[in-house]
Length: 142
Image (cartoon, rainbow, N blue to C red):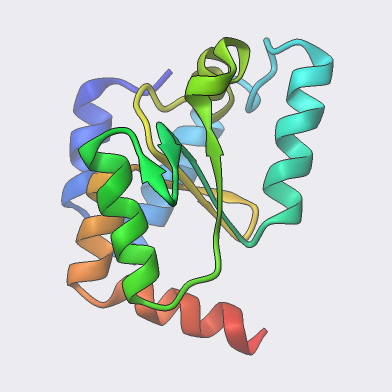
C-alpha cells in the first residue's frame, strides 16, 4: 500500500510525472485488487473497463454527499466530460473493496481510460494546470 509520504510526493508532481509516480508505486505494490473476492474484483474491473471516466464517490453526480465528491463533479462538468459515478455509500463491500483495488485510502477515486487517475486533490491540480483538459482532448481524438 502507498505510504502517506509517497502520496504527498505524487500530489506535488506535474501531470506527466504524476502518472509515472502512480505507475512506479503500482508496480511496487501487490497486484491491483488481488485480495478482493473474485466476483467483486470482476465487477469493479468491468465498471472501469466500460466507462472512459468513472468516479467512485460518496453520493452521485446529482447529489454528492461530501465536498470532495462535489468538487470532482463540478470539475468534470466544467470541462464537459462525460462521466459515470458509483455511490460507494450504497454498498459497504464496494466501499472497502475500492480502497484495496486502487490502493488509495480515500474517496472520491477517479479512473480515466481504464486507469486510476487519483482523488479530488490530484484532479483539482490537473484541472488548474490544464493537464486535465489536455488529457480529455487526447481521449476524444483517440
